[in-house]
Amino acid sequence: MKNILAALTIVSILALLRQPVYAIELSMSDPSAKANGTVVETDPRPMRLKAYLTAKGSPMAQDADFFVNEADRLNVDWKLVAAIAGVESGFGQHIPTGSFNAWGWGVFTGTNDGVHFASWKDGITQVSEGLRTKYLDKGAHTVDEIGSIYAASPVWSYKVKWMISDIDGYHPHSSDLLAVTI
Image 1 (cartoon, one colour):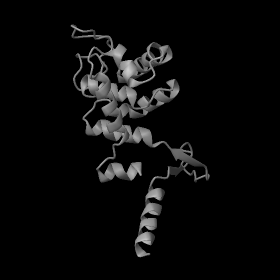
Image 2 (tube, rainbow, N blue to C red):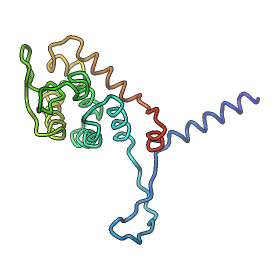
Image 3 (cartoon, rainbow, N blue to C red):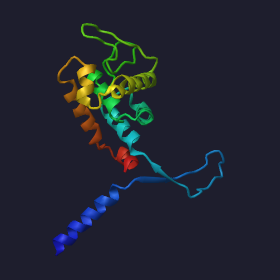
Image 4 (cartoon, rainbow, N blue to C red):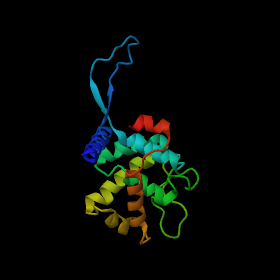
């Protein structure tokens, strides 16, 4: 009986820890503002992606919220564009100088350079829109289907799927990051 009670207690605690994080909305325009009682649910995806990209040493970590916003705007998996960047350039660490091209976008077999973007955000937008219009809207709905068009490597889709899974399962180890993501 004690084992069943202990198991139920642990399951209950774990269920509580998986609940969304809430914050009280404050008006910052008035320094004397008090909480108005409005409850705002915090989306954990940008914080998780930022922690993941930071852990990988990515120069795109500060744009994690932009990855998620563009994915939501275009109805694309929020991990896909970051995962492709992981496979193609080590999350933006190994790119042609000044290109902001972490995705190998427009880099064709036998060439060393491709499209140059104005910034990481510009690259995130153009690649996200390109995936939507050139792949997803034309029937390539899985990573394997996208990969057969996007990349010459037969293992590209396997690597991208692994990266998506790694991002999805990532939980930061730093106590500072844990405090924000729980």
